Length: 357
Image 1 (cartoon, rainbow, N blue to C red):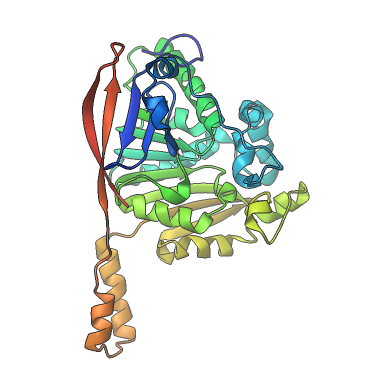
Image 2 (image 1 turned 135 degrees about the vertical axis):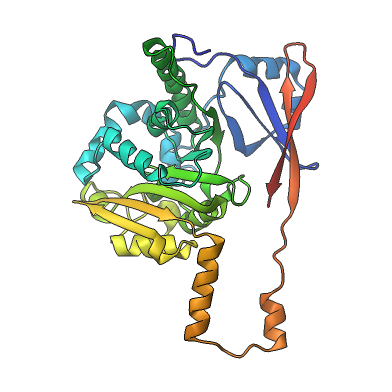
C-alpha cells in the first residue's frame, strides 16, 4: 500500500537477462533500467544489492561539454531540471499554445476511449509523471500502465510523485477502483523492448522534439502498437524554440531540440514511420503547439490499401522479383527471466518474457 510520504519504499529487485546476454536490473519501488546493463560484479555483491533494494538508483547525469552529451536528450537527466519540471517549467508551455495539463489529459483520455482495447497503455517520455498519474488514477479501466523515460532523475521524481498521488487518492475515496499495474522503465524510444503489436495506446506528451533518433523512435512506436492501436503526442513548432533562443545545428547531436517547421512536415514524418495518411491528424494550436493523433492500421486496412494500389497500377512481376519481395524477415526471439530476490538472499524465477529483436 502507498504510504504518506513521497519517497519510494523498499521493493523487490528484478533482474532480466537474455540467453547469456547482458543483465538488466531495477526494483519495483523505483524503476527498471533497460538502457545500461548491470555489472556482473554488482550482481554477486549481496551487500550492494541489499542497499539497492533500500534506496532508489542514483540518477546518471550527463553534463554539457562532455564527449557524449546530446542536448535534447541529456538536458533532462539533470536532477535540477526534474525538480523544476512541475514547479514552473511545464507551466511555461502555455506561451506556445499548449492547452494546460488537465485539458491535454482530457484530450488523451477521450482519444484513448476510442480504442478497441485499452489493456496496455504506455506513457512514453513520461518525465515527472504528470500524465502517468492521471492515466493511472483516472478510473480509465486500463490493466497495465508503463511509464517510460530515458532520464533516471525523471523516473525517480515520477515514482515519488505517483506514490504520494495514489496515497492521497485512496484517502479521498477509499472505494475508488484499483489503479492498473504500473511499471517505470528506463529505455531508449528508438530501441523499445516491447513485443510487436503488444501496446493498445501510447502517449508522448511534449516529447518528440527531445528524441535525437526521431525516425527510429516513431517506427518503433508503430511496430509496438497493436493493429488499431492509438498514438497521441504533443510537441512544439520550431518558431517557439527560435523565439526562446534554442540552438539549431546541422548536427543533430548539437541541436537543442528537433525543429519542426509545420504541421504538414510532422504529418509526413509520422506517415513515414508506417502510419497511413488517412489515420493521422495533426492540429496546430496557435502559436506553436502541435497535437498529433494517429491510429495504426489493421490488417484489413492494409489489404484494402494494397487492393486499391493494384487497381491503379499492376506492374508485371518476374519470379526473381517475387522471391525477393516475399522473403521473410528474420526475427530473433529471446527469453528474459525475471528473478525475485528475497530478504534471505535466495532467488526464484517468477516469469519469462519473450522479446523480439
